[in-house]
Length: 178
Image (cartoon, rainbow, N blue to C red; front, top):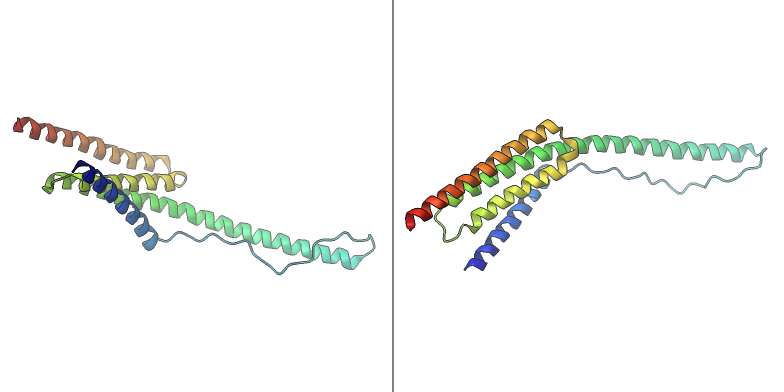
C-alpha cells in the first residue's frame, strides 16, 4: 500500500504541476519572438572597378537594405525583450500566487479530509512548490530583489510554519494513540 501512496503522490504532483504550467500558458500566452526578415535573395555585394559607378551604387543600395533590415529586426528584438521582461515578472507573480494557494490547499487537506493516505494532499503541496519554483526560474531576471525577498519570505513562513504545525499535530495524534 505504501508504494501505491508514493505513486499517487508523485502522480498528483506531476499532473497538477503540468496543469498549472499549461493553464498559465493557455490564459496568459507568452509573447512571440520576432523572426529575422527574409527578403528575396539579393545579389551579394561584389567588388567593383573604381570607375564602375553603377556597381558601386548597387552595392551601396544592397548594404543600405541590409542595414535597414538589421536595424528593424534589432528594434523588434528590443520590443520583444521588453515584453518578455513584463511577461516573466507577471508569470512570477501568477505562478507564486497559484503555488501558495495550491500548497495551502494541500496543507489543509492533510487534516481536513480523512483519507487512507495523505499522498494526494502532499502531491498537491509539491505541485504548489513546483509552481513557486517555476515562477522563480522564469522571473528571476525580471523581478527586483525586494519583491523576490517578500514572496520568498511569505513562502518560507508558510512552508516552515506549516511544517512545524504538521509535525506538532502528528506528534500529538501519535502520543495520544499510545
